[in-house]
Image (tube, rainbow, N blue to C red; front, side):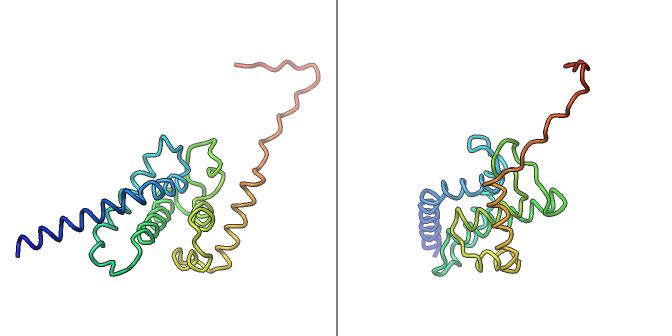
Length: 169
């Protein structure tokens, strides 16, 4: 009996390792896009991925034909949404690294955009996953895309009075 459990555990570990070897890179990239961190400096994305993979491993034996990638992606999305909401007090702007294109978006816009455009999740599926109306997901994706295609302009320099000297520190 004990030998059978050890064999099952070893098989489970091999299957999960194979899954992570095949899908880990893409899932890390997805997490990095969600957190808007630099690919080479992404501690929040790595933590998000670790938690999602831990949940996936815990559910591994109960998947029963369910796609483990889909489960891990759902975990990434829901964990990101939960931490963004609680850490930053609502759906407003998080504090991603400045200078990153996705940093212009709110966490909710980023989540919808990554799910829809990078992960290829359908509008209806994304709405169900996030608990939002389909029209809201559509509007968030449109707004996020428009923001990325036409970023806001930096503020114009303030004019100085004629003859006044500007002092630089």
